[in-house]
Length: 640
Image (cartoon, rainbow, N blue to C red; front, side):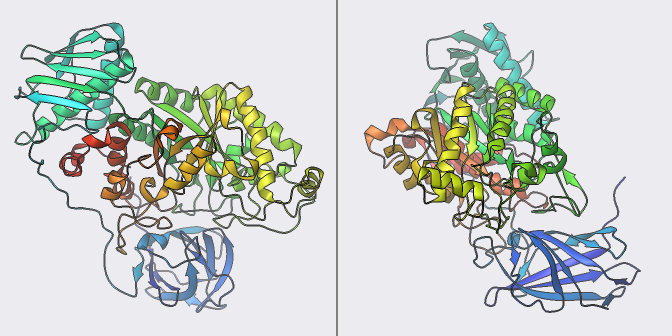
């Protein structure tokens, strides 16, 4: 049954010169409304110190705010209420794109009931327009490029001729590991391409699998008239060989005038980096577990081998922890009147997601079959507003004053001086280690507010005992203790680059993720850390792809068009003696700009996810942006 469309509609317009956001609520119902409030979420914050014209700011937490009209105001059927307020983006600047505006809105009526509101994209200075979706691409292969559709581009390829692309690929002979890999790719392709003619089947073009001594993720494919033979050292190499063949067959079917399944020749292939990752922010944006599965499938089709799940943040806690059911009972849900209000496109009604331990077990198992390790992250000590709402006993009861995190959550960092914090984290990370076999567990460590804990008597006493003068030293103390928990579980600690501050965690049992810039990764390597490069300027896929107002995304790291993402050469300027410290690269899809717009997630992901995947796998000398552009649209999207 299809729900009726909302009877109320919100338009918004932004004036950059003054920073004024004008909101117009239209009443399409047959009721006259009074004593109501308007709830809003988005990537903006109304300036609480400035006057509001036409109404008043009732409440505000981070990026959720509620407005009310003047006393006695009645919104009659067919009429509108207009309110204007001064606003800024999360970093205090002007709003750069329409997606900074209202992402969701709802009415709280006088009797406490909620009404949904349809939200139009925010305009600028009254200029009409619409969100960008289609993006023109180069469709012709450059001269001299092999007419095959493979992303990422193989290390070495010499192929010729074309065989019929009407049938499926079938494994007629091979060892057990090859059969297991073939079955996994067959199931993957069936999920991704749905009702299309199968790419893999029991009968079809004959494929033969043979063992050959080579690196675990490497493979070789030899094309001959009578059969296609794949060589690998084990299961994952066979898996990548079959993904390559599936991509080639799909391209030959989709565009037979451009692409072929070769008749002869050879592909010899293996990855450039051992860590080829993609982060999915499941805390700020509510992804149900089936959407996470879909993301993992798409990552596997790109030969990525890590999916990094950002499981906790200020906006939510997704992972079931049996010892602390409050974490998901409170942190798993947000909505009007709940401890966590709607955020970043959430509706007024209660909404959320909780990943049970059974959910995680299935996800980890299926990802492993696709060559992917699920890397869990519990963000500490900052970005912990949801955690502290669920477990207020982790606070210092004597703490006074307020400090604010980057998204303006108050007092959102776990306290390093509260002993219960470490018992809590031992239990949480013990569960995480039981559920996720990943050799690395990410402990966060980013964006702790400069003034964190200074109002805590327990924290000040801890600083005095050690002679510390900065909160960065408190953070280092905290992260070292958390790292010890991880090491005692037999794992290595991953952390954001700020974990090197204030003395830093032990480099011997750590890998740091450089997200601010490429240069920051080099500085970490010089300090002895192993590094994953994921600079926001190139690899944050939530960044807008142009400066156009109607291009969605965030902008704190500037714009990141696909050619910028593709052209980045990680570690190219590192001295040779430090290059072994660069363990790989990762892109990230953070949840702030995602909202609820159909097609928005895929617009942000593609083709930049494919561009990062090619850099992660393919030697720089083998990359060709025009070839990539001619092929990238054949990669299936997530549909999220």
